[in-house]
Length: 373
Image 1 (cartoon, one colour):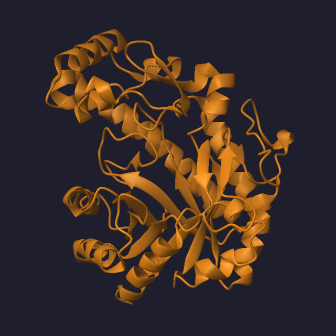
Image 2 (cartoon, rainbow, N blue to C red; image 1 turned 90 degrees about the horizontal axis):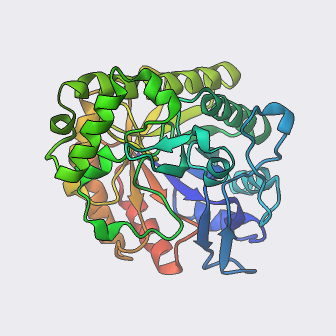
């Protein structure tokens, strides 16, 4: 049973005890952010600060502009531009391998600079945090990010997050959308993209736009019912775009660094968007492990695990939360995790070693120790 703890570069830089502290959790590797979105992150155990305000999406290795096309990531001003490599070496010094945790299409800075490559909903609203992978510039950007992470970061593995377009959920800095009471179906409809690239792919974009609008306003019980005869061809378009990106990036990784471990955040939901890209219809890429969201708990997560097992035999990892609102209770965490083991999960990705208080690190340590080996 493999376990991987997530961390940010700034969790380790300037804290000589951090790497050993994470290793003491009993984990097998550290997933270290190499490309990440805007975040305001607590650092409860750091000797120099208690908070990092990462004000925009950034690339945590030196940005070589000549290696990028139209879309160029930003370096951080709040930490060293080579912070991934510095933190990587600290983790390896504690005897653990490092996986490059690489967020691809969640980038509000690039969306603000280049609005034409962002997701647009059926009402014409743009999501500046969401780069649409139907756009060739976005595909090129993701290839360049992955290539630079492999060359400059030299990780032992890579985990691709947001390997597809983001949607309505997972958005603004100060999210104020809850009061609309939109259902999960309405949110999925609001996630369907109508950017210029996507419109070229749809069989009847005007009819689709009208169907989506009616479904959002009328509160359809399912996406399929809202879209009617358009549901199947639109689903095929969307899953094909994501599958193409997945194949492109995994082929690149295998050609450049054939021995490293490749992981990816995924969902079996054909209408899924966001950090966990859809693999409906099959993965069709040489991936070592697929990570699925398990934060809500077994009632929601186990059906998601089972849905993934129906489309792939690639080993599954559970993305589990060790932070509030989960209890700082190792036995309670272990009970939940064992439900995922029973469902077929063979790996755990722990969120988040750097954000965790001492009590929560103790709980994670206890839960990891209780997993079957």
